[in-house]
Structures are given as structure tokens and as C-alpha cells.
Image (cartoon, rainbow, N blue to C red; front, side):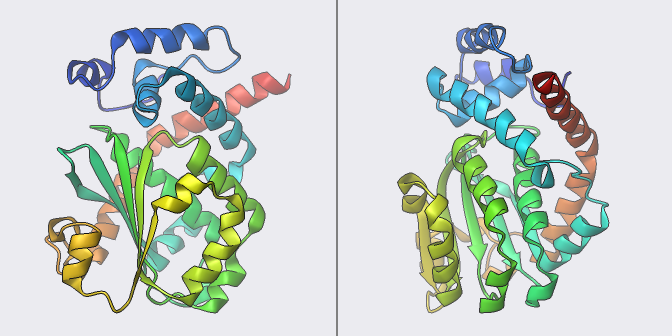
Length: 281
């Protein structure tokens, strides 16, 4: 099955970011496994995420299919017009920001709590949407790296009651072992005691490498310090003194981008479920 990417593997090769030899090597390896025979564009994403390390790329592909097949609550039914996802988009701002760093190679994902009522916070839906953002970022010109910015303002202790340990483990496993996009840094704005408690719960599933990527910034940090320590103002929404549109507009654009990816999400979900059925026979 061919997934509807809007970039060509050949273009990425011509840019010198990977090579045709490595793509063919991965295709040869896939032919010896029970994994799906991926198209060149999918292989390119995995190679970039592993910095063209063949062994790590193979591990990541295996983990990708294993974890996605074992966590349908996170990776299936990704229709943005579903009532649950529509509600989640109102509670939290989700955005793959429309500017990049490091010569267009690093994408920024931004999250902000809009509705502070913990009863409206759906952890599973937020996990699903967070990973769906990756497909927005990789749709046209796949980045090499990812920086995440999360504003914790408005989060309270009762939000911790929304945590589901089983889902949290699956989320962390995919993030660390299977995500086809290399993580550079996770910036936490307005970090407080709630973040400390959440980190204490989640760190049991976190490797040292991920822990070292997390940089917590207290609420007393000035905007100039945020620009210096996190990302420049050109890469932040208007509410943060940045050059991008307001959070509400970014969120609205994200909904539209998710709608444009309905065909992609449906095709990939069929690929995963079809592979799972073959393995279970």
C-alpha cells in the first residue's frame, strides 16, 4: 500500500540528507522480514530519524509497527471530525509551527492548555493528536529534528488524576523507540509543582536520554529569557510576543491540516491493521 506523501524520496536524496544506497539496503532488509514492504518515502523518514544509522533504523521500524499495532487507542480512528478529538482540540492548542530552525531542518511543536477544567482533559485524545502532528510536519518537507514547547500554565493537581499509566507507557515507548522523527529538546514553560509531580510519575518509563532533553522554565522567566533559552520570537505565537498568529488561529489551521490528512491517516491505519492480521494468522 502506498501512503500519500507530498514529497519525493529522490528530492531528499538530492539534498544529501540520505542516499539511494541506504534506501535500497533498507528495502532489501524489509524483504527478509514479515514487516510491510515500505515505500521509499517512509524509509527516508526512518533513516532521517536515526541519522542514517542502518541498525538503529531497523530497530525503529520494528518498534514502530509493534507499538502502533498494540496501541489502537492512540494510533487508530484518527479522524479530526470525531467528537472526542474535536473536544480535545478546544481544550489544548496543538500546532506544528509554520517556521523552522537550523536551515529549515528543525520543526517546533507547540502545546498550550486553553481549558483548565481537568474534567475536560482527555489524555488519550491528547496523545493521539500529539503524534498526528508529526504527520503534518513530515507531509511536504520532512524535518530532521523536533523541538517541543509545552506551556503548563493552568495545569493543576487534579489534572494528574487524568493520567493512565498503561497509556503513558505506550506513549513513552513510541516516543523513545519508534517515532520517525528525532527529538532535540522539550521546553516546559511555566513549570510548577504539577509538572514536577507528573515528571516523577512518568520518569519510570523514561530513558536518561529523554530526561536530558527536558528543560523546565519557571513562570518567573521573562520573555527575553524564553527567546534566548527556548526559541526565537519569530517561532512563537502572538501571545508570547512572537511573530506567528495567535494560538486560536494556529489551532484552527491545525484542524484544517488534520482534515487534509484524512486520506493519509486512513491508508496508514489500514497498513497497520493489515500487517497485524497477517502476523496473527
